[in-house]
Length: 319
Image (cartoon, rainbow, N blue to C red; front, top):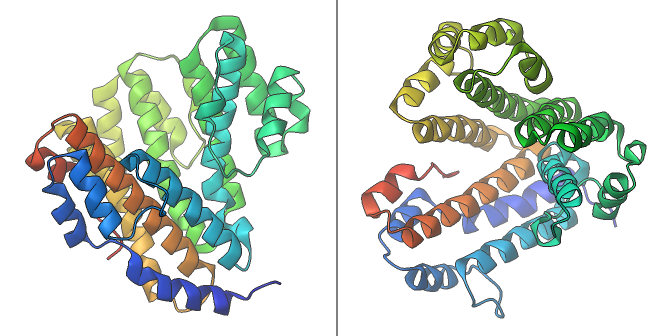
């Protein structure tokens, strides 16, 4: 039975109260062992009755449950494709590297995805890239050939990342397109910074950098080195790029956090929307952020990072 966006929105609004708040995250950050974190998450309703092994198992379970919920609740599940293709491109990279190296890759595959995983495997193993959707077929073939011929995994990944950026923008509209444009902008900036740092040539930049407005100017700056590139990015001051550069000068991790915060600011803007796919898309992104932050907490605990460092790394939530 098909559902309306009215039903979807009503259902999601009722579910929003289950999302963690920033104060919940602060409390979890004070825990000192993964066992304590696991117990606290179970108390907050995370994980099924048969999930008791680890925080990673809970995160996997909750991610799967989220997508099952969205499939049953969204009036049109295809609105999530611009987000889901992250999994598709991860799977393409994984299969290409696995096939060419002869190493097992099955446990690394991500679900759900827009493209059936069997189709990805057949395309790569039999070099029939034309069976893939048009948005990724040519890039998958090019990445495969680059890795097979030169073993340049960085370039192969960059080719697929550029294709992913274009596809995600082409697939989106409205609120989610605005979100994706911020995401793509910062992904592109990260590609440019890495290229400048490692003195990549113009050919690499042309193959790896998504052609957003002003990209050619930034490519030229990247050829002059990291300092020149950062000055050019700051001067443009697009989507908060001036502040992003200031954060990058503190540390790459501070830059990553700043970019994530810009994305959550966009997600939070959906609270003002009363009807339409924006509401359920925002819930999806809020839940995924929540799960990622729990993973960040678990990682910090495992590496004995200390409470202060863990708190510093945490991102804002939807509340």
